[in-house]
Image 1 (cartoon, rainbow, N blue to C red):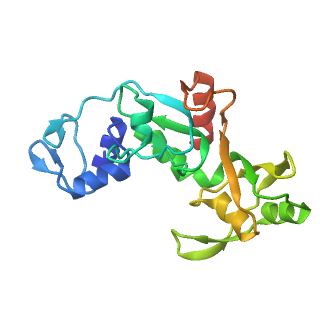
Image 2 (image 1 turned 90 degrees about the vertical axis):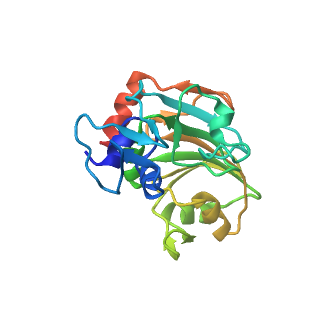
Length: 235
């Protein structure tokens, strides 16, 4: 098993974070400094910052209703980070991100494997948001949002057209939108390109996991049925 996969499987961190720890020389295997991509044999002991990794703890899967102002980062040196806010007794990390000014559903876990599975298939599965904009929209706005909007993709450093979306009117200035992408600030950028400013943005669903009546700032464990359905979607 590759070392980053092994570290991720223990729930210590994601594969990407494991690679970062390896690159910075903080990981060794049986007293030898680890290298990217090395294989782990049965019986090896892995140390991070000179402390042995514990065996995989019981997996934890949480749904959290993130308030505005909380950052979905594991960097606890940052003010208002999600880890300190939740205060969960075990090490967990968010699956994906919600920007600081967006509220609503975000999933957290100590299972690095499922993080990779969900993020790897992120552009294939639905995410639903409730959006409020700064002035009344019309049918042309709905049609453009549904058919795709040209926005700047900061990762690819180019302007791209978003995939088709589904829009459901809630009021003159609010609507529900279902997208299958996860570009940075995507919905805000989509609205902005059509002359609208997002006042409030709240994520209500990720794949089969719904926010429901979970109060803002609170979290709950995912049910067995939710986990079964979620794993069926991402495998």
